Amino acid sequence: MKCKEYHKLISTEIDDEISEDERESLKRHLDQCPECRQFKAFLLSVSGVHVGIKMPNLHLQFLTELCPGFMRKMMSGKLPAG
Image 1 (cartoon, helix red, strand yellow):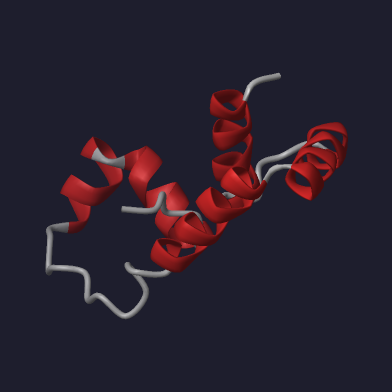
Image 2 (cartoon, rainbow, N blue to C red):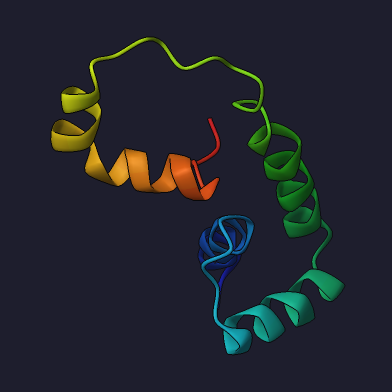
């Protein structure tokens, strides 16, 4: 697997949607790859940017009917970084 593919796994890990096999593979790669470790550190540094940002007062129907995927992720605390 190439670093670009590991970057996707890093994002998946941060979103806590990674399998145990993927996690082990990623760990082995990170042990050997300083560039991917740096990429992971960067993603972790920006992944909490949304924390503390107030949600605008949007109509509940808009949120539940037009943005159900977003609402599920928001309620689970798994919003994507950036």
